[in-house]
Amino acid sequence: MSIVLVVNSGSSSLKYQLIDVEASQTLASGLVERIGRGVGHARHHRDGSGDDAAGSTWDAAVEVPDHEAAFAVMLEAFAAHGPSLEAHPPIAVGHRVVQGGARFFEPTVITPLVKINIDELAALAPLHNPANLEGIEAAQRAFPDVPHVAVFDTAFHQTMPPAAYTYAIDRELAAKHRIRRYGFHGTSHRLVSRAAAAFLGRPVEELRMIVLHLGNGASACAVAEGRSVETSMGMTPLEGLVMGTRSGDIDPAVLLHLERRAGLDADGVDRLLNSQSGILGLGGHADMRDLVAARDAGDEAATLALDVYAHRVRGYVGAYAAQLGRVDAIVFTAGVGENAPLVRELSLAGLEAFGVELDAERNHARGDDARRISTDASKTAVLVVPTNEELEIARQTLELVAA
Image 1 (spheres, helix red, strand yellow):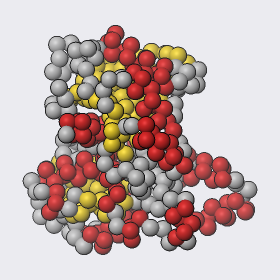
Image 2 (cartoon, helix red, strand yellow):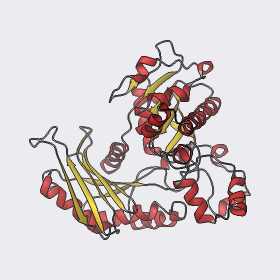
Image 3 (cartoon, one colour):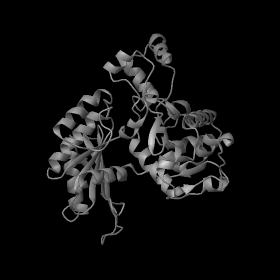
Image 4 (cartoon, one colour):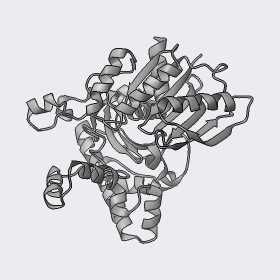
């Protein structure tokens, strides 16, 4: 059997997928949200492919005071709406954990010591690691007889050299408080870089590429011979590209100016940069589809927001090309990267000197599989490769428990 349950536990939500890894097939997926906030909502989708039963979706209002109650809802959904966990028992549970610090550089079987480390690393990811840990503990109670594996967002980036992950501040202060670049979206960058190599029919160890994970959160990664050597997110997911509601790169003195002149405290600055900035702050829309529609309707603020977004992406592509020395492929992935041809076009505009030649027809063509959107003559291949972080977590979990 190769069935793995993948769990992504947030502060007020529980996302899950039951995956047959060998078949690369999701048997069921679901979401329980508004945990601890009164009446919550649950959605469970059963995939009918490869099964006698047809696909179906169940939605309901539910009482979910805590994560343990959310797991009970999930188990009831499997029992009532399928597939049966008795007929499709998971051999392991894979957990997405956001921050692994410098301690975890590969998937890890969860032990009491590992949970202590995840808790200690919560200082670096206060919005994520505590929720990840709550989900782990609830899942272990729900599935006590199978191994549980932590797959860390930061792990893939542990191959970055010191020059890439070190911030230029007092080194003793940085060491004391574990201040350095960690990077995120690692499972996506790892999966997509390998899928891009497979599409090109070349070993990933021979390639140098730039992977652009563009979703509501966004990050760029320079991948050399299958290893992350540079990435745009930093100690937190705030640094780097412009995102849906996050500012990305900003002069640190701006924060001091806002404190002194606008009266913002630390919490106010946090809300501003993480929740009220990005394309939402610039153009009034956090969803790229809405922003593009507003831009097409002549909205000047939306036009500027999109120009800033693409300018930042283009700058990182140029910087990473210099770091890599050569670029065999530029790869777009995630919700925006896979589905927004205008964003891809604007982000690569003017990069002909880097050997980038986009094919307009290919760029606007839709597809669910990996595809080339550059011309055949382009020296740098430009690809769109769908990401599936849950499948990657399931694969890494299975590889570990089967070893």
